[in-house]
Image (cartoon, rainbow, N blue to C red; front, side, top):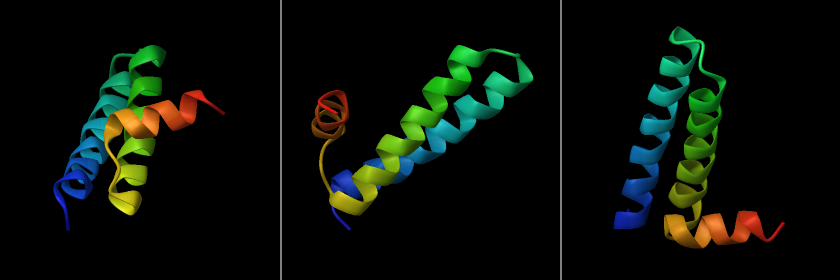
Length: 61
């Protein structure tokens, strides 16, 4: 496991925490950010790419 894959796992955890906070605080924006962080984290874990590279790819869709 390289460092980007490890960061991906962290981003997944961070995303899940944001989602939970968003639910508890009834904050849709925080919940959405959490879903995005989780998506990026999963992509990082599977590809080993940086967060910035993945965000660039997503924004080009």
